[in-house]
Length: 244
Image (cartoon, rainbow, N blue to C red):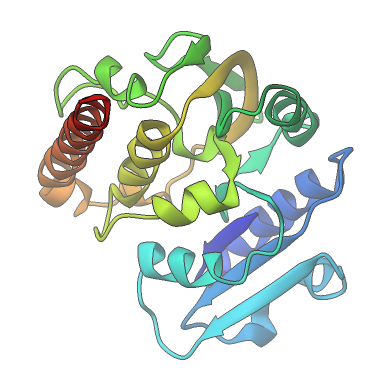
């Protein structure tokens, strides 16, 4: 598990809730927390005392993409999942996807996500990619235009660590996770399960709720969309050349 955080006051309780959701998982796990330029002493006590939590304290703020990628170098588990500090996992998220990965040999396994509203209620989000087995590069084809809904939830993907290292977070200040999702799903086949595995918390402190969010969203989406298209085309060309 890789989580980046700046340990902001309004997110500390959310980070504690994320950790609590990890403690409810039924398979072994560990997490690397990238502390993005904040004081490590602000890390909530439950995380400090949990031996499954390791921290990477960065000396200055570098942004979510860079913080996550630097933390990725510290991952010791064969599989990895990106997560945000204000969200949470469903109780069977890890076991359900891990079982698929180990029984099928695919590179990644994902699920649906739920929006978690301030009143505690949830609503299901079904990504445009349909459930089932998808060959490398197929997920991107469900993202018809950059302005459309992204084809799969980046934080719903559990993938082989070496695969994620080959397609980590993109070099963007937002939308970096779009690139990670299309990168991983372009490099290996995987399976999407029709079950929720992640809860995306809706609150006023979300990046998507900030006044500056729309300034770069269209450009970020276009870049990520073109990355997926170009990566898929390059891999298909390489396969064709290999076949002669």
